[in-house]
Image 1 (cartoon, rainbow, N blue to C red):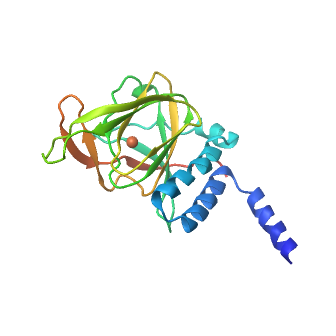
Image 2 (image 1 turned 180 degrees about the vertical axis):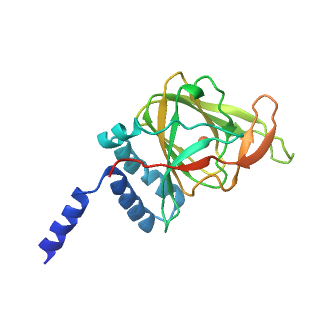
Length: 212
Ligand SMILES: [Fe+2]
């Protein structure tokens, strides 16, 4: 009986594609790990496996370019989990995004794993320097500046300030968020003027992640 169950389980997992495997493993992790920092660090190797999948990489060549409009970025929405609420996004930056300054921002209260799938881009991090007592004001200072390539993963914890800059190449990222973006305000920062304001996150455009 045990052998039969094991065989059946093996058969089920062998027909999974990379997206289905990622969702299954993520749900298993979320069920057992409730400490959020530990959970999101433990998700790194599961996302790394997804980023390395040849079928996923092939499928990503067909993903449409994301186009910012009306002051909002665009994310491709591949999946939103009905129980745990996490979302899988794609972010493609094509020709139109090259040389365009990306805004410095945070992701408000959510956790995010940002995984580069194709191309290279520069991830810049900032520290908040002021005491947050003045409205519409934030003093920030660059704390890290790293060129990231395929397979590299950046964990963005709640309210961490950052931006991703294109370096003249088409880039594709797979982003895992603890909650689908777009329905809540995120912080926006201006390094030169110290202006701070909040606005809605990226528009969510449903898209097929990979062929069945
Ligand atoms: Fe971001």
